[in-house]
Image (tube, rainbow, N blue to C red; front, side, top):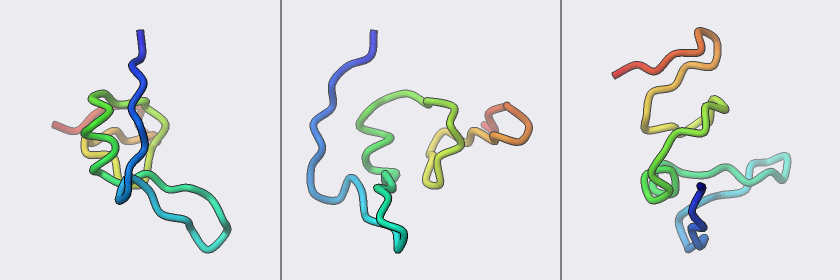
Length: 54
């Protein structure tokens, strides 16, 4: 079951297109990789190869 992680200052920023981009800080606080190929993924997931670099 996924846990609710409240969003705090520094957890995301807005891209020039207006999208929220979650930071490494938020991903580490969440505690797992969603395997979506996030820009700041601290878990090393590569969406092209569908694998995690450790």
